[in-house]
Amino acid sequence: MSRRVMALLRRDLTRLLLGGRGGGAVLPVLFFLSVAMLYPFAVGPDAPLLARTGGGVIWVAALLAAILPLDRLVEPDIEMGMFDQWALRGITEELVIAVRVLAHWLSFGPPLMLAALPAAALLGLDGNTLRIVEIGLLAGTPGLAALGVTVAALTAGLRGGAALSGLLVIPMAVPILIFGAGSLGMGGESGLALTGAASLVLLAIAPFAGGAAARAARG
Amino acid sequence: MQGAAVSVTDLACRRGDRVLFRRLSLRLAAGEALQIAGHNGIGKSSLLRIVAGLAPAFAGSVEVNGTIGLIDERHALDPVQPLGKALAFWQHIDGAADNELARLGLSDLLDVPVRYLSTGQKKRAALARLIGQKASVWLLDEPLNGLDVHAVELTETLVAEHCAAGGIALVASHQPFALPGMGRLALAEYAA
Image (cartoon, chains in turn red, purple):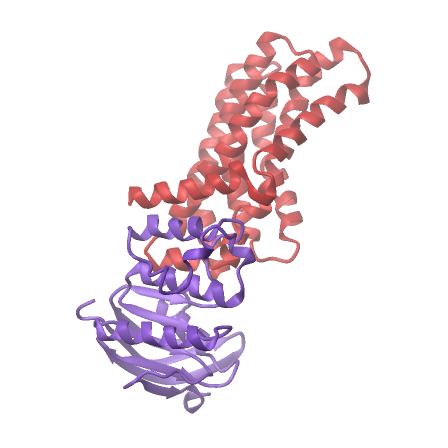
């Protein structure tokens, strides 16, 4: 079994991290950095304002960057019959989705955390704020990954599924955004803990909800 | 592959509001092959998917003893990957085995991305995947589509060898499939 899990993970990482035609992890990171770069242009060079709002901007940019690869998370595999072939071999949709959540997180979570360093410099965040942003991203991005894969499985095969999945993810990601960005203000550590809790709930649900959705789409 | 068996009892299939076929029963023992014939849309692919357990039966039951391998129009090979890597993925999943690449004429194509392969080449690649799976029950949905004369003969030979080794083959095709001792089931007789 572990041999199969490794094969699945390696394939997912090749597709999501290195990318092929989709651009892999590069596109979300560039998107994330361009938001951090454009924001000071839009609000003007007011350093205290930038430092105060910059953490929140990083969070919004991270959330939107996580949406970019949704349309290639599940749908292509259903279309080319991969899920059929896995089912014949006794590899459940739940396992495939669980592995995909991990691969999706690896392909955007750590890259975004790295990209948050230059972004923090662009926005003039101080060291302490950056630390809380990084811990918050570490706690929150796994939940965003789980949510993204679940919604991608739910909308696979629908016409306009890509646009729909983006719209579905945003409201459901609001708790993570509130707690994550809130930890920068008065919430502090409890905000981080709640971000982690929201992530864990999403991570626990994703394989079952996403697995059932993929099975239904395979039909 | 010992003891492979397929048994279908009183099967009915519904697609949307329409019942495609009903009261279909068939029984295949190790070494037997059956061609499912019928015009487009009569439910050949649906029957194979039900036997594979990928789609629910509307009524009736299916029992399969043995592992199932399926080839249909979706070849399950990553289009952007070179053929060698796309097949290697399935080798990791199924365990290393001889895919008979040389015999299928794929040895020279391993560096070519799957999306650049022709229809017939993709079909042969799917056959390589199927052979590597070492499944005892082969479900082939229009396996001859897009194949040249030589590849058609090769496919027939591969199915014959599979059955000779104790495997079972269910072939859904509107084309003639030359295989000695192969049964034939006209799906039109069961149309609802």
